[in-house]
Amino acid sequence: MRAHQAGDVVTAQALYSKVLRASPRNFGALYALGVSYCQHGQHARGVPFLEQALAVQPDYAEAHSNLASALNALSRHDEAIVHGERAVALDPACAEAYFNLGKAFHALARCDEAVACYERAVALKPAFLEAYYNLGNALKALHRYNDATVCYEKALAIQPTYAEAHCNLGNTLQSLNRPDEALPHYRQALATKPDLAEAAANMGVGLLALGRYAEGWEPYEARRRVKGAAVLPDFQRPLWLGKESIAGRTILLYAEQGLGDTIQFCRYAALVAGQGARVILEVQPALRTLLADIEGPQQLVAQGDPLPDFDLHCPLLSLPLALGTRLETIPASIPYLAAQPERIAKWEAALGQKEKPRVGIAWFGNPQNGNDRNRSMPLHRLLPLLTAGASFVSLHHEVRVEDQDALDAHPELLHFGGELGDFADMAALVTRLDLVISVCTSVAHLAGALGKPVWVLLPFAPDWRWMLERADSPWYPTARLFRQPRIGDWDSVIRTVAEHLAAFGR
Image (tube, rainbow, N blue to C red; front, side):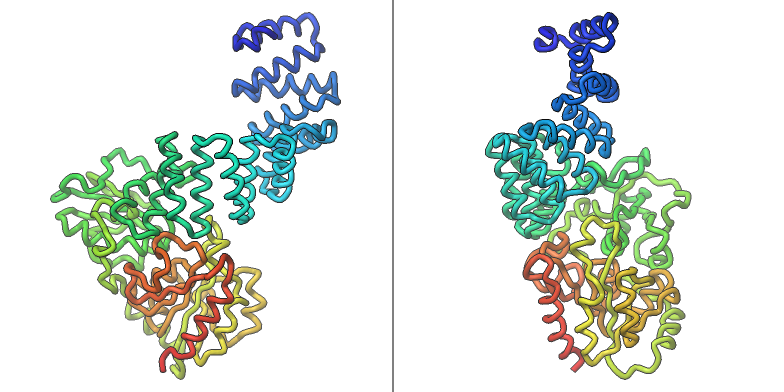
């Protein structure tokens, strides 16, 4: 035990093992050896010893708590809950037991239960740093941003250099649409942990949201190093970020994020070609036909197809950095996309004779998007718009199950479903409309790139590209922005849009 306390792990573990060879059911040695392995990150080795210790002494709360912690580290969260619950039942005053139980609930997205456990942990141990931090994370996951902010502040009062707490406090402030207040926390996080990619990337997001492009593009590059971010291909070719001439060289530009991002940033291909490069543009298969004739690329390929040879590469969202984009230099020559005439004719026939203004609507985006809960809405929230004197068209291939009843109840909302093919087909349909009303999804970008009037419905804390407060967009001159005045308040947005729609086309 003295060797263990002195930090001589090898000696301590050898002594515990020696005891167990002589006495295989020695609780103290089993428990101490299990704890020793877990303390040094060897949870898979530690768990069996903790389990054997509990077989000898099943009512030892601390052993249940430590086993729950180890099982969490191995992502065996259901088992961790069993031992965490047993630990708190045996010792209701053990803050660590509530903390470990809370972590298990949190990992399984049972955040309400996690919050209750973390709250109990900090009540029992008011200076419990990790519990305050994790409580903040659980509250943030429940979109209780103000409460989360308080928890991160309490964690930072205990340890002012806690980089992750500064970072998540910054993230929470951004969710409250307060990026100016978030920036100092990202800077403090990076002062402690310069390699904390999430802090750098989200500082970039905050700066871009504030329109501070000269400062924002560089830290935004850290997005590619954030844990859980899509891993970019290893092309075994140099990354180009604008620091050397590309005249006479072949460069691969490629889609990095969603379909809307590709539509927004493919405009840069022409600028890159203008520097004398031969441009290859790789895009998602769904956009292959739509972007076939875009200005700039000498060759267009779909993701998954073989790539030709190239000298350099650059993801689309790094092109604003490479080309030094500022608010006043955003390339906004609209339209830069066009629909195919034969597809336009198809949709003109399908829409029939025009008697009223035609308005397309899109009310939800990709559910896999991490912000989809905030940016999308159920169809029934949009239904007040249908009373305006216009013909309405759904701009979705399929509707979500929860929207089907509302769609069925309103046959005046045209929904072509499977007849609406790829994005080239969508572009042709949008071309025959007078107005598009869309949440922040690829449809809004498509309409903007086609030069159609588009009203974009934005959550309280919008994506950085829409910036703050302004009702227009330098990226899309035909766009008009309608913003939530409070988190989740789509009703106010729809009322305002309905008022403008009543006057549209007069």
